[in-house]
Amino acid sequence: MADYYETLGVSRDADAEQIKKAYRKLAMKYHPDRNQGSADAEARFKEISAAYEVLKDPQQRAAYDRYGEQGLRGGGAGPFGGGFDLHDAIEIFMRDFGGAGGFEDLFGGGARAQRRGGGRRKGESVRVRLPLTLKEVVTGATKRLRVAVLDPCSDCDGTGAAEGSTPTTCGQCGGSGQERVAQRSVFGQFVSVTTCRACGGEGTTIRTPCGTCHGEGRVRVQREVEVEVPAGVSSENFITLRGKGNAGSRGGPSGDIMVLLEVEDDPRFTRQDNHLITDLPITFCQAALGDEVEVETVTGKARVAVPAGTQSGQALRLRGEGIPDLNGRGRGDLLIRVRVWTPTELSREQEELFRRLRDVEDDAPTQVEEAGERKGFWSRVKEAFTTG
Ligand SMILES: [Zn+2]
Ligand SMILES: [Zn+2]
Image (tube, rainbow, N blue to C red; front, side, top):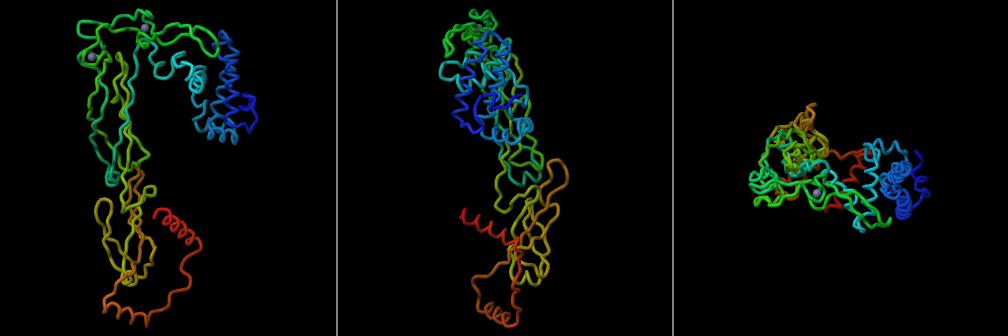
């Protein structure tokens, strides 16, 4: 396929406005409505729409500039991700240029397009948020949720028609769900096929709507669902409950419930992949002499040995006290960052002992940290500046 820039006839440094203008001009020329089903025009229209779709998006454009079409296919997000057809091309044009002129219904886009074919329509998916504690992430959890969804109306069996009446074939479109209308547009006057306005594409109309659902055939209910949350999830994960979302219309399949997981922050722990990091303040004496201390884990407490001579910032590791791997490949660790705590108020006795210790202790070495570690220090300082 030709270069996208050549396809649109713009230079490689064209700005967004120039790209839009160039596409609009070409789209007016090759739009299927102006070319009486010419296959050549259709092909050109698809080409320019694909080029426009990529170049109008700064990220896609950058990927294309760098890697060509390979960059787009790889990401799966480009217009070639899954069979780019004429319908997609028309939708792109309608989306960016169709709004103002009352174009929306010209070809029937998006949800309306799904109605074609007898009014059976898949129900919408419903999104719901599920807050989780870190403990639930570690142990896994079974959660019950109440979700507002649309169910088929039981009073009319989902038909939308009042008892004793049945939906009748739409007089406007004769049941096809489509009508041919003459429209004025930027192309001039032409006839197009559009979703029937009388029945909304259903092909049938309801004379006496059901009083319960007002003809919609669906009613809002609170659905209680159970969600099995496996151990090891993160806020990037979601769980799909297939077929538990809104009921379809006219017996169409139900949509899904998408459970978006939101792991609450636990100030005690920072997650790094499947490892958890926590801080452990200890005293000079514990650091110098060694000790065994209790630390909090996500699920309880554990004892950890602090070896004699532990430095501030040194990490201790409790194996397997992190987060289980989502795919069952083991568990992360709990990394305990030791912070030697300096007392700020000394009793007379403590001060006396410290002074005696000072008289006999060795001086600190002149160098304790590697240059690389000091960079880590800088990023921590910067973080402290920006957060506090
Ligand atoms: Zn109709
Ligand atoms: Zn009803």
